[in-house]
Length: 272
Image (cartoon, rainbow, N blue to C red; front, top):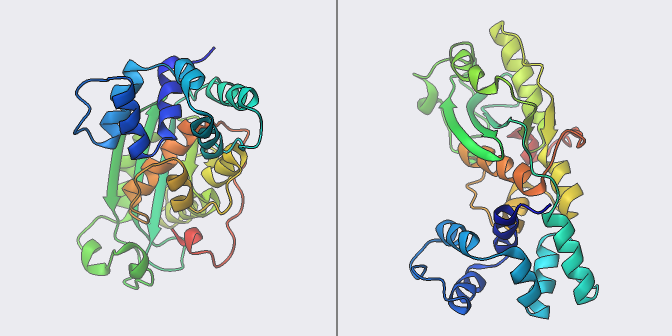
């Protein structure tokens, strides 16, 4: 059974801004003239219906929606609509999970200098947190990537001091989601070991593999997936990266049958 509001939101999310505004005008949805994209999506999703949209979309718009959902665009109109219906009817993510992102100061996995956590329950984001961390060394090799320097973290807590205040967000989580999960998992293990703490036993879900399986995306860097899903992203900002990871899982209806791949050596993405 299709969750109508969720399905409508996802279908409308494939529209660009001009298409959204044209849809609001075509269906005479009031009060949408000055709304930003997110609020416009929410308003239209509460007013319109995915099934009606599928019936009334032009052939070109239906083809674009299929393409943007990663379902291809070469089939007949009937086949395209059926593929979209099947995609929109997939079970939503119901179990709680936490998306996380680490930024590191240097090539050592124990050098976390920022971490963000986004908790999802019953398919909704319910909590967000982000913290700077003072790594065990003053060396910052990756400031050019994330903009964080020793000056920014010199007075922040160490991982041993910060992590116990964040760990409660993981309680009851079915899995942890991260983009290139092998990297974030190795950072978490190295930092907890260096701090004399126990690493969480919670399994990891990799949103690289989620995106490839759900939408057949290549390349699959976080900016590529965010662009495909029309999600705002400030790449290598831990809070923004974690938020997009959470929304990738929600958009795909993903679960633990996706395995976390090992990040490729030398990949900038794998360094956080």
